[in-house]
Every structure is written in structure tokens, then in C-alpha cells.
Image: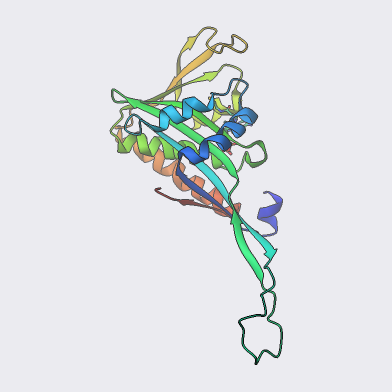
Length: 222
Ligand SMILES: CC(C)(COP(=O)(O)OP(=O)(O)OC[C@H]1O[C@@H](n2cnc3c(N)ncnc32)[C@H](O)[C@@H]1OP(=O)(O)O)[C@@H](O)C(=O)NCCC(=O)NCCS
């Protein structure tokens, strides 16, 4: 259990479709997650074709308390006896903590990217992002979900294995930065009722885990 969970502080995260305004921050976070990040232009290009793909961002809602500007006295009339109290002004910042995306072509969903900021890992957020992709793939009628993952990336492989993906082959020297091989991993049929049932069970377990960590994920459609 994390420190925040122990002291009962609730953490709110917002999951929303990626917009062009998100791209500079996504690029920054990508550079913290990957050794071969996409150029920003690739994201702008992707976002122009929402019927062929789906990109998401995850932001944390952080309340920020600051001092309001003192109120100006003029215009308050002659009966002012006491200066007005300076009330704290509550605003919100929403740092980006995760992103994910996929293409959906010819009935197949292909995960192109997924990343969580290092300081927010192992809380269930990567899983929440992945589940959102799987749900959208099902909603759009895809039959399979597939992806490439570095052979050395055990953390990501464990996430995909948890969701029933299996290794179907290897793409030799797939990554240009270090010529590392990629495993090709594919889901069971997204139309299989038994797999759908399994996804519901994973979602239930994730909801319980997030509740234990005092994490709430709110979905925004736009
Ligand atoms: C892969 C990644 C997105 C996982 O995000 P996360 O928020 O830490 O993952 P979660 O907390 O939701 O973990 C979900 C599951 O993933 C697996 N997992 C995640 N991190 C793991 C790790 N360090 N070691 C082993 N398993 C891990 C576990 O199966 C875990 O389930 P569990 O908690 O029941 O054991 C994150 O590590 C990341 O951003 N890595 C860098 C970018 C990257 O490699 N992306 C994938 C490209 S293919």
C-alpha cells in the first residue's frame, strides 16, 4: 500500500481522448518512458484520423491552493467597515501521467503506445489505460488486439500476459535504437464470451485495487 493510501488521501485521475493540445506534454512524457519516442508530428497526424485510431491521456487532478488578489476598496460604497477576508483561491492543475493509443484496421486493433510516468507506476494506471483500449477495440468490433513489445520489457509483457495476450512470434531487430527484437503478442478473440467474462473479472479486481489505493479514475468523453 502506498503512503497516500495509508493516510487516506484520495487521488483523482481523469481519462480522456487525446487532443492536439495534449501532444507537447505527451511527447515529454514519452521521452521519459521510451528510448525511441515518436516525433510530435506523428501524434498530430494520428489525431487527424480518429476513425482509424484511438488515443487517450490520463491526467491527475491536483488541487492547488493560492492566495486570491486582495479586493480593491473602490466601488464598495461608503459603508465599508471591515476589509473583506482574503479567501484562498482553489484552482486545479492536471499533470499528464499516462497515455495510450492504438490503430484499428481491418477488424484488428494494434496497440501503438502505452506509458505511465515512472512515479505513478505499479498503481494500476497502466492496466486502466490498457483496459480502456481493449474496451474501445471491442466497441469498434475488432476481433483481435495485437502489439509489439521489446523482448527485454518484462513489465509490459507481464501486463499483456495478465490480459491473456500470448507470444505469436518475433520481429528480429525491430527497434531501430538498439536493434532489439520484438515479440508479437496477440489477444484471444475479443468476441469470445469466455474472454469477455475474464475481462469483466479483471476489471472488477482492478476497481477493488484502485479503491484500496484511494484512487478514483473518472472518464471524460471529450
Ligand atoms: C508497462 C507500463 C505501462 C505499466 O504501467 P503500470 O501503471 O506500472 O502498470 P500497473 O500498475 O497497471 O500494472 C498492471 C500489471 O502489469 C504488470 N507489471 C507492471 N509493472 C511491472 C513490473 N515492474 N514488473 C512486473 N510486472 C509488472 C503486472 O502484471 C501488473 O499487475 P499486478 O499489479 O497484478 O502484478 C509502465 O511500466 C511503463 O510505462 N513502462 C514504460 C513504457 C513501456 O514500456 N510501455 C510498453 C511498450 S510495449
